[in-house]
Length: 210
Length: 210
Image (cartoon, rainbow over all chains, first blue to last red; front, top):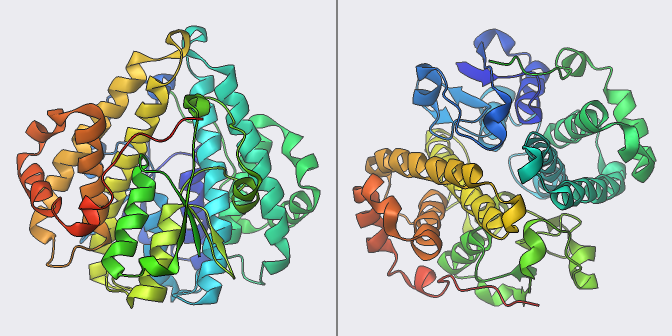
């Protein structure tokens, strides 16, 4: 399987941590992508294999012999079922819905973080400080709500926890530690899982420019 | 169950069509939301029940006795399993991955359509014509790719087809029929499903202002 990645993307990291937690990294060819900062507002010219793989022109994208999946929701669902025997997300029932409830909040944080990043990359002329504040406020509200889900977190570092941890890490890295005062217990939980090999091996770094 | 909705949101419509196709509309209290146009860049003050239900402050949001789900991915997955016996999306296996592949593309269209809408609502000073073009180009690429999935569409108007149909309809309504020349066979397919009662009952209209 071919997986298109960058170190900076929390959507990619969510998939990479899943792969490491399942112990299936040997099955993948990881293709590093490079992006100019103009991606924030422009369609970027990309290598032919990438544009052929995903018309969305976004990462992560997974290409297997039989199917192409172009977002992390579909990729995580596929990996969990096909290679994890549903160990990281229950196949159905209450456990699944509780995990999806947490995951929907954590995914909203990732989305807000990336939209804020894209806004930051705009020219002064087209940048909206209101929009940046809106995304930060949403992030903080969701972190506070995620903290209330903590008592339901089980013993497995599952897809809901992976996505939450990636969201915490991204804010630390990109926007500083301000979120921690809105969700101090969540911050303490994050610090405890940040030491996992799957998290250490995927720490964020700037995307190579081209 | 309480579902927060508007007529304009394709994310909401995807859930409403799913509910109608499953014939379970009697189980829901539909709460109509109103939004000022400033939602594009600002955090909007909303009624207390809404902000209590969803810290994301976005629709759709589903509140049941046991779980709150704050995005359409989670809601559709839940409804399909709990009330549809997986009739609109296979529980696992090749049929599920093929549907998720189509759905990831269609969801990318919905996301691009809404981001373009938010951009259109910005003040002249903060609007990026490049960004609008980027979203339109992504939409058109994904429609062309979805057309290639048509031969795999089965006899059931399932979640992949529902999401695709909602995407086609939204572009017709909001941005005109320009997409149709990029995917004429998809347009013909859409015209054939647009007559379904679930689609007719959920045709888009402007969100009430407040």
